[in-house]
Length: 332
Image (cartoon, rainbow, N blue to C red; front, side, top):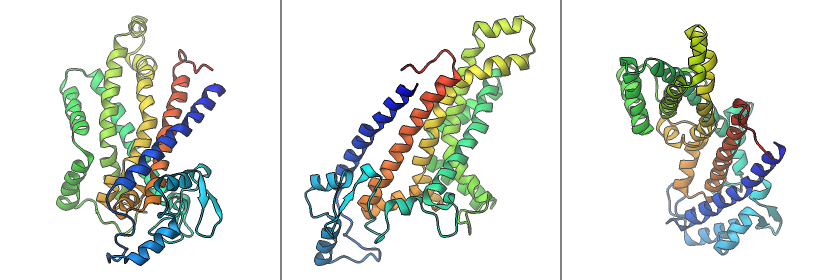
């Protein structure tokens, strides 16, 4: 077990390095740069651009910029500064003197951690995952137990919509119905401390995951129903409720649980469209803004955080899978 964990953690290093390499060279290959326009939308003169490029090291060859970001290099004062390998994600080009770590993970003054941009996105992802679990798993179980009935057909219809329709389309549709039409929710909240303002973003973000969870739960339940141990349990005269809970659901949820870890990471890392639509003060919205402003350090830092979350989620699934199914062992 320990050897497996160490090996998987070591594999994170080349994964993150490949992600950093691809992201770095792709964003520099894109047209434009961080000094094309400033925050007031005025053109930055050539002399100022040159000074800024020298200060941030953008005047160096592209390969040297990459090695300096990843492994470290000398700053404008001639001091050596360790790079991303030491957890230093750089300084934002648009917010002078503000590090990426501080911008993403530091909450406002006198506020707890979950008021940071990462905290907001994490909370939204957790709420969306809770919605997907609370709705998706029971829907899949009921659809399987009521196979070929109107309940099953309705469940499949909703699942098909959730899987095939993009979440930003669902977001606009729900905004038109519940915000503009019925007026039940506000899309421009005065404060994100209110519980009701989280409902619509969480439902929209988790709708696709809910649909995939319901579909997998239904398919897994239908497979378990046909197993010999289920027929044996029923032949012993056990109540149907006991058969379903003790023998069917426990085994049917094993493949479902394996997708929940990556699902949470996917919800956190894939929320930037929803955050932009709802004006959400999270990391995803900051990521979209950084791409538009060509804030290279912000793009790199946020991408590496996202990649690390996904990698750790996959690792947690491997560990959880071994605990859920006694037939599976994580061998050294």
